[in-house]
Image (cartoon, rainbow, N blue to C red):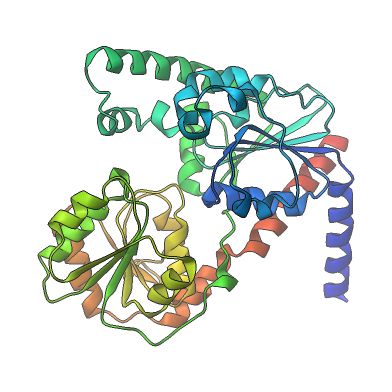
Length: 393
């Protein structure tokens, strides 16, 4: 009886939410990655929704997740070289997002890591913003961004700083137009509080746990996989394994730093470059452990590794603290070990520690299931329903 009552309650909840006229707003559509996977599930939750974005340059082969929807875009879509240089138009994006007209919708949901939350809404509309991160390069990561982009000096540097100052002012002001914030992790909820002075509900992003097959048969290698950009710290991981020649590291991914990493990789480090998803999954399934050295807002790949039954060796900052259960940190079902600093010595120490402990593959899989697609969609629908009830009452 209790299960039937719960099922009936959920059905009524879904019906009530889907009766709303809904607009979903995102930034740019150019690939199918982390934020796009959130967008995909939002579109499944609200099949009646209309989609809005700054620009849409998705290739035809990647459009299936939009479920046939054609986004309404802005003038940025038509600017010269926008297809490949859309990020260069960031200073114009606040103006662009404000030109999208969502005045005819009851519920506006923005999926934001840059400007989507700046969509203009009225007092009788509800604006819920799912935040992947406040604009990283405009706030606490500004100095890192400028340095990595070669914009930390000279006239271009001063111009970049002026633009980012303007973006911060706009970003803070537009937070007032959001009725409810959702953060993709407690880490991001703290950022939202720091930057906007607002509280945020935490709903973890959806991970396709069912798409990763559990495997207890582990090989004799470690794995790291990500886009090779500076903040991912792949180079640091390779440097650490160079000093552990008796331990094999497999590296999957491509990006601007690939050649630099290739030049320093030791004989025990195998660089595979880009690999299709089925190959990545196979390496994840059989890896002794997945090594993750970035400070991420959430971090999907460590969860995917755990879905395969593979433990994680992670930098103990950011979202990893919420997705990995560290050995010796008061939990009996650990799924990995943490290192405290982004240094070669700290990674080596963590690997040595991992070699001395026992982590159950079953615990890894069970932990990953907390972040499945259904957990996300149920949480989103329930949250929107409760907000609707509150405003009506």
